[in-house]
Length: 275
Image (cartoon, rainbow, N blue to C red; front, side):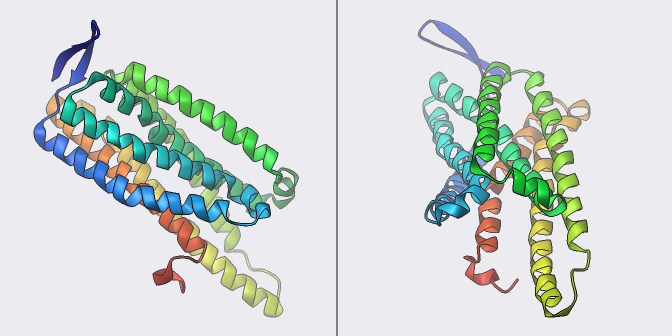
C-alpha cells in the first residue's frame, strides 16, 4: 500500500492511494476551500470590525476562524502533492492536519466551556471575563496545535496517529456534550414573571435552538472523525484506508457549518433571521 520516493538524498514512505480515493479527497478539499474559506474570512471580518468591547466575547470564535482559514489554504498543498508527487508538499499538508484535528475541536471546546460557565456560573464568568484570560487560554491552545502538527508529521504512517486523535476527540466530545447539555438544561428553567419573563423566554428559546443545532453538528463532526478507527479490526487494509479517507474528508468539509451558525447567531443569515 506504500510507495517509496526520495528527495535530496532522504527517503520517505508515501501512501499509494487508489485513484478514486484521491479524486474524492480532491473534491472534499475543493469544497472546503470554496465554502469554508470565504465564510471564515467573513467571520473574521465581522469580529474585527465590531466595537472593541465585543472582541473579548468573540475571541475564541476569532481564533477558530483563523485556524480554519489556515487549514483551508493548506489544502493547496494536497492538490500540489497529487499533481507533482512532491515529498515537500506531502509533508506540508500532513503538518497542517493538526490545525483541523486539534485546532478545530479545541477552540470549539473553549467556546462550549465559556458558554457553560457564563450560563451556569455567571459570577465566575464575570471574574474571568477580561480579554487577557482568553489570550492566555488561546496561547496554550495554539501551543497544543503546534504539538499536534508535529505529532502528525512524525506519526502519519503509523496507527499511533489514529489512536492519538481518537482518544483526544473522545475526551473533547465528552466535555462539549456535558457543557451543551448543561446549558440546555439551564435554559429550560423558567425566568422571572411579567413582560420581562416573556422577552427572556423568547431569547432563551432562540438560544436553545442555536445551541441544540451546534451540539448536533458538533456530534456529527466528531463521529465522522472517529468512525474509521473502530472499523480497523473488521476491515482489510484497503477497506480500512477507504473508510478512513472518506470519513475524514466528510468531516473536513463540515468547516462551513460553524461559520454559518455564527452568522445565523449574529443575525446576518437572511434566510434564517426568524428562527
